[in-house]
Image (cartoon, rainbow, N blue to C red; front, side):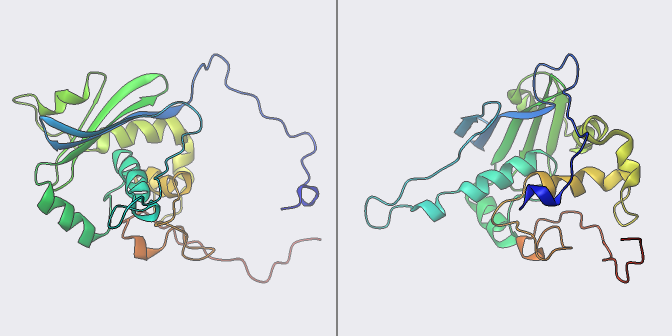
Length: 220
């Protein structure tokens, strides 16, 4: 894209005074086979993180394209509020293999820690501000739903801008409409110029209906 096509006279960016870290940062992702058995524990640093898988070294071993990179990205989005983490067929297969499976994340929002733990096989979401991921599995703990975290992220990231969302989304769906833009990946690619995410991804994301502008009559 040619920079000279976009005039930027007088344009400047100033970081928020007093900010010492990112506004939103997923610093850890954990996958459980059962509440007592962790099978993946991934720490993420602030800034650029590269997820890669090696090529196959022997026959029938996993190869790079099937190493789970897209699944990892979708699990991240799932912890950030997306409704599902994979197409239906894959979700059913995972639920059969890991009937007690969960995924969780430590999310830093405006410098405050949020804990989120979601079931891979059934509708059970737990979020809280502060604490530890293991708090979700304590005796007597009840599901909270994912909504408290979505509300906190909406207010922090979007603020009053949530009211500017198209009517097909509305303020309550603003975060789930923003999330595809923030976290696009190969499986959840855009379908067309005005389609935020291809329906083939089965992501259940919010898709604002955006009408193209025809017959532009403004001044040159």
